[in-house]
Structure formats: C-alpha cells, structure tokens
Length: 114
Length: 115
Image (cartoon, rainbow over all chains, first blue to last red):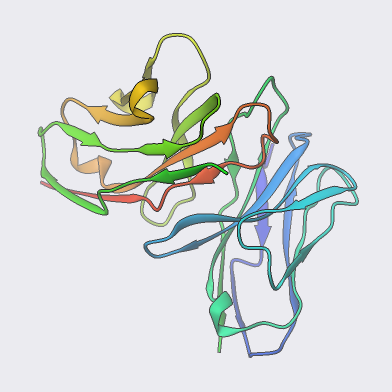
C-alpha cells in the first residue's frame, strides 16, 4: 500500500492563480481531511469528508474548495491564491471505528504564493 | 467547539533528561485524545492515542501519556529522552460521536535535544 499520497510536493503560484492539490489514499478509508500547517499555529483543519459525496468545513475553509467523488481521492482547490495561503498542506485519512481513528498523513505540499 | 492548548512552544533538554509536554483541551463531553510527532522533514506520525479504559497510555519509542479528566489534560511523558527525539509534538482531540475527521490539533511543541 502506498498509504496517503500528495502531489505536487512543491508549488509556487502568483496571486490570483488557481490550482488543485491532489490527495489519494489506497486504504479504503472513509474519512479524509485537509490541514494547513503554519509556524506557531499547529495544524488547522480546512475541510473534511466522511465519505464519497459528503464534505464539510473545518476551522479555516475560506478560499478553498473540496469535492469527494470517489473514496480514494480528495482534491483541494485554491480558487484565487493569496499570499496568506502560503503554507504546508497535509492530507490525512482515517478508517471508520466507534469514534475517531488514527489519522494517516501524506508527505505534504509546500505552497508559496507570491 | 473543542480546542487544544499546548503551552510549551519550545523545549530544550539534554540527553537522558525526563520529558513532560503539557496538553489541555476544552470540551465538556467525552473525547478521544492523540499525540502525533513530526520528525524534521517528515510527515506526522501517531505516537499514542486514548479512547477509553486505562488513563495511562503507552505509545511507541518509550512515550506515555496520562489522561486526567478532572484537569482536561493529556500530558506526554518520557523518562529519558534521546537526541533522536528531536521533533515537533502535537496534541489533538476529537469529540466523541462527532466526525472522526474533525480532529483539532494544538499549536505544537518543538523539542530540541542537546547531545
């Protein structure tokens, strides 16, 4: 199993450009999430999904869109990039259990917006 | 809504010293609790987790954490740290019954170990 994969690893955008960060998992996990990691702020939840076709907002959803058309994939779209979106983005997935389960993280995408 | 506080932003210890990293959460209901570690240049990995039962949880690499419900705390401990423990440590909480995906993380504690 590859686990959770993310592409690209690095990306530089200009203000106003749009792009999609890709995330895929091969563990048949129902739950998937996107976080951003900023110095001193820890990980903040952007959006999450409890299954194909179902998504919801996290702590910092503004400026980001998600969709979940399949169990495996959970892309994150930046509609119009802003310098405040410069960050490291992590995708995570977890299987279903009675409550929460261990989150498996991808390697991250380092995004710089100029 | 739940939140997590990690009051120590940067901890510097010498090898063989004992470690305790603080984690407090705010949520009135039942919670699941986690500690994750991020080694330099790597992604987050689970150290340990608490769902129910014995409040003293043992994780990988000699780490343990104690859930004290009355104090809303889940502090991470290790009796003797090694240089290889240099990393950033994140406490996380999930409100029981809510979506497993909605796990809230603290701001992290950077641990530096002097050889």
